[in-house]
Length: 154
Picture 1 (spheres, rainbow, N blue to C red):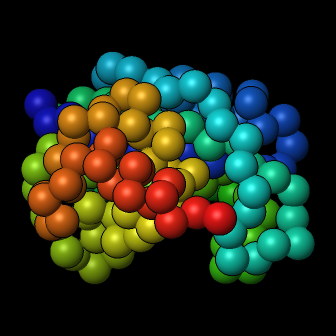
Picture 2 (picture 1 turned 120 degrees about the vertical axis):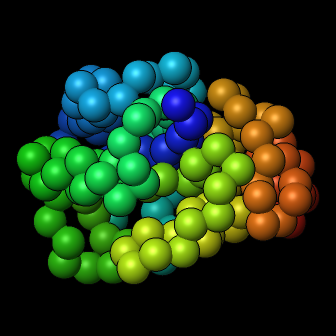
Picture 3 (picture 1 turned 120 degrees about the horizontal axis):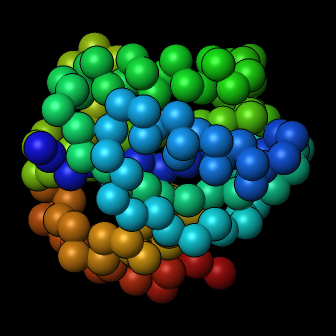
């Protein structure tokens, strides 16, 4: 079964409980192999909102990428996710970052996540659990991407 890396985020309600519950629900259809610590981060894009709690998770699954994404989206909806403002407040955000070394470009699903290399709030927790995971398009490890981005931050 492939290793799949996910980014989790929440900035509404009990953020920690939201992430813990999301991981529990993901465990119903995938094997949770590792979970990063939780990181409090500032919002990106739409700034007039509360800070986020972010984490990264490594799972394995025998589902297809599309079926796995459908289940993640169902978890978001079941936990109160409402999509109103792009990059706006949300109870839960679940993103597929990497799917082993696959490159996937299908309607509604692009892996590796197209902006993961630009987001410290993604790379920092991901580097805890998968520093040597390779971005199959950029040819750099998660740790290298994180360190490069860290050097550009003010």
